[in-house]
Length: 593
Image 1 (spheres, rainbow, N blue to C red):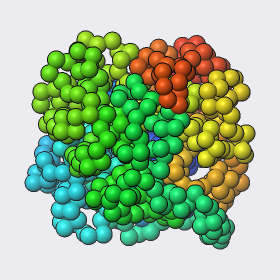
Image 2 (cartoon, helix red, strand yellow):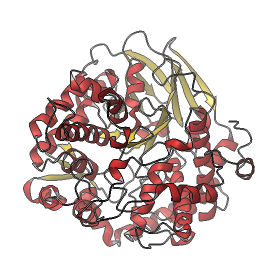
Image 3 (cartoon, rainbow, N blue to C red):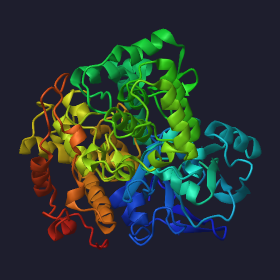
């Protein structure tokens, strides 16, 4: 199959064995690559009988059809069963690690088993070495990457865990290329449970062949020209995701004080303030013509970091927020789940549930609590399990825990956009702001007119609006299969052109949405097999209570009503299961529930 080498490596850490697995062309046609292909490859390897942190539980690192071949394709996917949600887990990361995998002559790595002692894998052009990681255990992510580069090759790309993953914090992440992270769903804990500290990859074989190289180069050049003339390119390059802080505040989308307040001094933590106060250095991922990444005092900073560790915790001191973000990056913690979980403890302290807890706005306590989470000491040991588990331990109503299916709610308040509320409850991995990022449609930043997805009233809950959300959610599933940057200035028409040139067959935007629909439904089937029910697809009351002030004043999304309509449009029955007719339509007969 064009665009792929046609094989992944399956590595068993228990007996240090490696075997090649051929990727069937039919799977690539159906699921494209990345997270979609990962779901297909792991479908029969994940079950309710295999706990996420058991040695038999697999974790896979995968590339996509576009990896290294198109602009905005410097990403890789990590998939497995989430220890945080106990359901399907996936995350993607930028940088150069994914392209290195593709250039090493393979399309991905599936890892099973548990090493007797800490190890890391060194994969040079498809050849695997098992190396001793005893001296790396306990080290932070930057130091780990630096040491491994010295031990292997300075050109090798490294993905690793920090102490959080080693200590099985349920929302530990996997860091690559220094502060780039596959952040969500706790897959760093899967690596830790296998005594796997890192994977280093040296890729010098090159990228796979494509069907129509001439057209691919032509489309590549055309897209670079469009990006260069797009005013949004300069905004992304200057501010990155940090430019959204003040806009999100005006819309009531940027949360404060554990989702309980809509008015706060957003300007103190805005991208503009950060640029005024600090020297900011730009950096980009492989194949990126925008270069939207920003390092402040050497710390990789994003909107989600500033909001989760800042406003959500009532902290507006940028120095403290930078220290907290740096600690999360070095320890290997998901900044979103970390911020939400600490803010939960602050909220419970304010409510009098925690007598010796931590107060909103206490930056020193924020940093100390993050350290205790990683070390699993005191209150930190409870918070290391996530908000859902912590609520149970504290005897608190689960409606007060800001998560969906166990995954903490991101820094886009579901009261700001009705379709984000619906997205959170229906996403394959829990509360996810990327599957889909529908808020970008309603602020007119990234509509998809080719599929009839256009901006309307952001609080609208009509059937027509939900139809657009379903289409958008399906299309964005494929972004994580190609794997494309969600922030990339690339349209679905552009994606269809690249897809067509790579495989040598005509692909349309409608075809892409259908691939995404199939991918979504496959992940849903995995979740059903793992025990997910309709009752799990709900928003907790903490993010449904109408706020008295701010951009969402008075609005509460009616998720139950929207979910009924959503199920009908998706072809899902009242129990939350896909109908037999829908599975046949999507050609998923080879995957049984």
